Image (cartoon, rainbow over all chains, first blue to last red; front, side, top):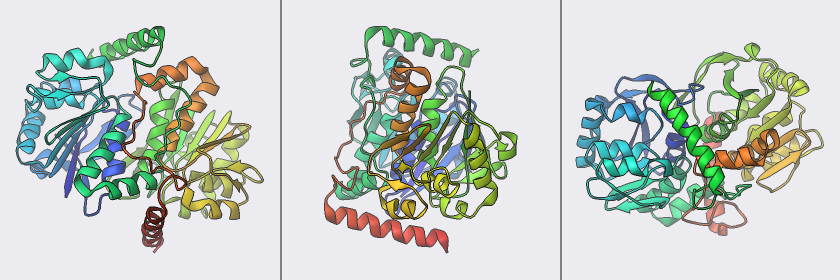
Length: 215
Length: 215
């Protein structure tokens, strides 16, 4: 089973690495990082380079595609080559997935038309404007399409997907192998749980970063 | 605040990326990926390349060091240059941390002598043989040294560390920004919770991979 994860400039690393760490442990799976151009892609902070080993054209028909998010997704919404690849790969994929603002890319490719989907909690409006029906859940499945909420949610999504692909016992084994027994020291991981002032602060910071990224 | 994360051949990606995704969001922080030799390092699955931008000698005195794990750590236990850098950086660091089998490297450098520490649940014996006192907790702090359990635990460790560095509110904000509100679909993330047969299966698989990695 070939699993394609597209990388691009200003990708959020954990969006890609969470699912990679889970899905690469599926028996018989091979994960391939792909890009419009192969080569090193820098993350949203610019602090890390991740290698896209293959061009999109090297892997037109993966069984699974997982689109990560990041500020770089905004540019992808106008990237005909990437959107064409997503649209075409989705036609033959067994599973089409996204993490965080990766769902904006799926939506721009037409994959989410009329479907329930999720994204980072800051981007529900943008997701809706692209034709999906945003829901505030951590993992949303509609047929073969699975979208995950912000950044770290890709781990939960990928375990769900691993169970769908290989059964619950395999997914449980992967969870044990990556010792995913979360103990966050705080309970502020969603806007429904964090206090209002914190939500406002993080929103303002994120809007500033998004502006810097698009300037 | 300069945060150094060493990369090496056969690193486990999520060990490094979990803390990176949290700590890079600290106000005034700059995360630097370093290596004995700069350049691309392939992960334990070989499916991904991560860029070490700097040589160890470019950053001898980071305020924070975070050593990730992976099968590649076994070779590091005999790597005088890397161990010397860890030992020296630890002398002046404000915080010295590890994820998963990264604690084996800290121990081999002498950082954990007589201290309580944790690691991936499969490697308590090896950690003990290197002079630490293994404990089955997700995050273990001893003074300025913080060790985390397997793979995904680096996220919890880094949020704990973010709070120690910048206060609870900043850490809560980072947790919200990365939407870390975990909902694992199963409850098998530690050997204490998974059923015994599953623990045996995962142990056998991991021993096989470790043998392949060292051959």
